[in-house]
Length: 294
Image (cartoon, rainbow, N blue to C red; front, side):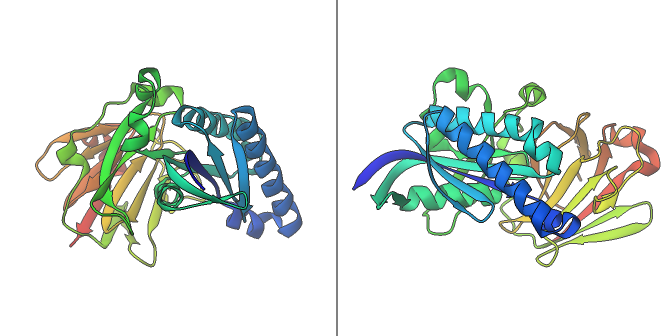
């Protein structure tokens, strides 16, 4: 039977590292506690828990409004309670559309797109589609922003990716113009340079984290940088930088223009310089150089 539903996936990011660091018993209990938390939030917002798949939860809601409110509550609750204690984070994707229900499970393009959005999300991020965004009331649309458009396997044309801003400081960001957020030329490699050291982002190493935290790929010492400041990722044949900081990430493009990202993502091209919490010129030897290869 076909229904209109908002399908949501919530994926626990970092559980693999937790198993390695804490051992199977402790890590498994932490994941179980996290999933129980997500189930409780789902039910509290009128949703239905469909199933859990490893460390991922699948839920269904009658409306986009229920789904986004549940997603916001999941991130907020997760950060303050079980996830924060365990040192793991959450990525969420949801999409509203027609689904086929069979034996209590849901199938179809809506489910596939919701799952794909979750894969595209960074830790602590909620992603949805333009179609779902347009089904939201205006007060909730005001808490969202457009990121970029991208091709999704199994879909004709590109899907416009919308981010739901669940943290208070995210609401202070500015949406970047479309011509900065999308670069059509494919990229598969990038070099990150910092204080004489070089790291690669490519198909073998699709993400590099930057921050003061000792577990970051690129560990920096800038006083203005956050512990988890930014990530550089290979996604859909594009190199993307995503700000996750308190003070923002300054990106100087090849044309000399400098952009400030606040919980935003930007598709990179060519050679760019990055300031972590401070303008590029003011960053001195704390600048990060990123070179995107075609």
